[in-house]
Image (cartoon, rainbow, N blue to C red; front, side, top):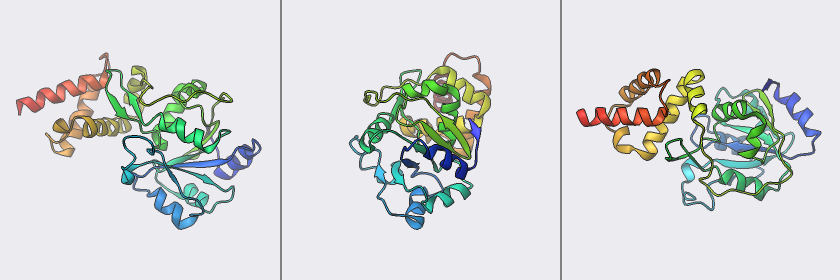
Length: 244
């Protein structure tokens, strides 16, 4: 990871002759898709849940769009205060192959075997993945060699081509969750809230939102030595739900 102005990153990475792409979140307050159409709109962003059982989830579907080197949307990206709008990257692969690799990460497998949606489209979250995995990230997402995320540059040495996996296949390391707990507690809390909402709605709705958030923060402080952070929190919340 290296701090780098967008203009400098674009100039340096353009020498690779790799096209420029943006992955856009559809669930951020940044409204990246809407702002893309306002500022540029020359291409139609591609829905990355297409071809999955979630292809009709239009309102929350992440998007991929190719950008011109001087797209006016880049000014919006450079100036937005939101860190979860998405991210920029360059790829050597055909557009269809990029989409296939991203589609393979629609869901991931937690350490306890639970299948959950993977927030790869959230730049704040993805930058942590890149810092954690460094070059081994190529085994997870071999589509992009250069990333620009929230004014930070990331480089991954990717293979020329690699077989596309079928979602869900990627297993989230327990050590990664522990690192998130230690360094990015708010991000981990948000992630756990999302997992509960998507997979354990009875627990998610059993407590007022602020109460649930407070409980998760407290349980995270107790779970640093636990074998499985999410499983520990889930068990404790389920126990409290039954006691109420």
